[in-house]
Length: 640
Ligand SMILES: Nc1ncnc2c1ncn2[C@@H]1O[C@H](COP(=O)(O)OP(=O)(O)OP(=O)(O)O)[C@@H](O)[C@H]1O
Image (cartoon, rainbow, N blue to C red; front, side, top):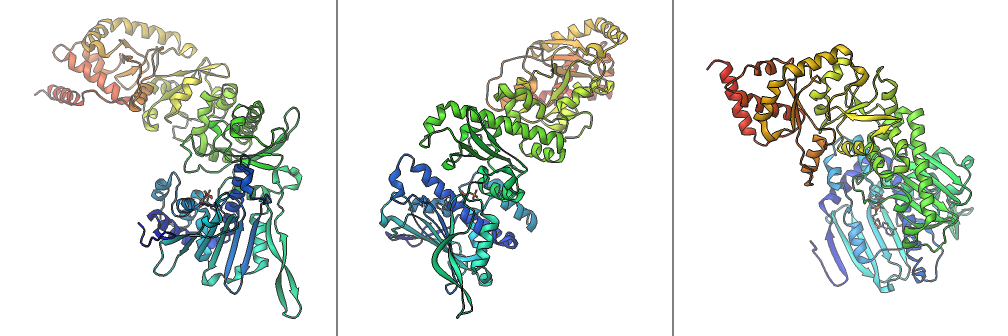
């Protein structure tokens, strides 16, 4: 891939994705060009945090200079803006890895979602995060000079990339001398960006977007020069941002905009947060938490090992990013900050693993987030719907993972149901219970591989007839959730496809009598079918579940549900061998006709069984035989 490669200098081509992203970004985000500064400052701040973390074990990384700061400067005549930091810096390999590739999971999915519609794409790019590359919105050439903390001065690196001319799509990396640790980024502005070359403009942008950054952002002070009749920069530094920990302030002193701006930095998100909770906990453990729920899922949400979004501070000193111990996995979408007053400043990851303090903080954070969600669910259903769409499936994992909060999490779940019969998940278990029919004791649900399969399941027929609501579960994790959630608010959850149908108080005496009569009348038929189907079935029985379909399959009460068994099988896992029970509808003509069937009895039985399997989303072991049988029966019926 390299075209020129000497000991020191190397010209490389961008990954195709990077080129595509750059092109897209420059066009889509142009109207929002100011964000370049926020992104670069955000990275500089992260680099300072990283250095502080690594220096916990290796104080020599500070190289005698432990005061971390970010600097922004500009040069009118050279038409450049410079953003620099004395953070962790990058080695040559890191420069190539981080600035030449998009090492993000979800990249492919990201590109597949692009539509060509500028507004939508800009939104998507925002969600994906363009970080460093946003420099190219305002610059046509970017020069990065950096040295990783701890490396020799001779191991500095210069990276340069121009977006125009013959070299577009290439970048150059060379090894250079660099006495200063950290990173300097020089933006050579595009032609029409000269208005950014002003102290006033840049200060405005810093205050607008980066006020909350904890490190001081320094600029050279400016003074009015009488003789020249203009502002001139002096040699004196001044801090432009507030450089104080937002979360440590009193809530009354923080505006909505402050909270939102801070979120964009900690959450690595272009979008605003959906909701947040900020509180100080006092008592045996003292800590502050500022936790955010994003509006949309990041691209790596499904990776349960993806980075977690909580930054840990101890007495306002940054300790670590991605403190996974502070949030349970099922709340991995939460972003924010926890600042502990009790932990020692020299905590290490190992100490954190075992710390009782951390466990307490984690329990406190979990409680706060669940409380925030419950509040949204109750008071702002529109927002809760956005939340549920983005993170509902993740939250569900909590039902099995967090025993202590199971009931609370269960209360936050939302389902589709036969009431609206749409795929919208809006029904809570409490809603369901409130609507239960007189005499109804259980919460009924059906699971299937897709919403349509659930909605059209033959098992629902009697419930529809009687107007009993049934929850329609078709998310992959639902089987697992339901496995851990046997009851809610004293009401047990019951699969409509499992066990004998016992509608309890929902059945009247007459129906019961009729069912008994049918069972008696069909005794012989049922026996014949059972011996015809042999070991494909555990049992055959007459049902009153069905109104329209001739037959359906159910799992025995103690056996694994058929949908779950199929899912496990598809995932390559062993499911216990359990056979279904075939239930036949005594009022269906196809079943009635079987009573007098002689010659093709076995074919009819097999077809009824296979149909029932297909209807509930199963697959046939031997589809060819099914087709052959159907054809034979059709021919027989048409008299040929
Ligand atoms: N000032 C800097 N000092 C040290 N490393 C940096 C600096 N700026 C960028 N990097 C490195 O380059 C990587 C890529 O940065 P980029 O801004 O593109 O993405 P990011 O910050 O990882 O993610 P996001 O899209 O969420 O901002 C960073 O993760 C970091 O490792």
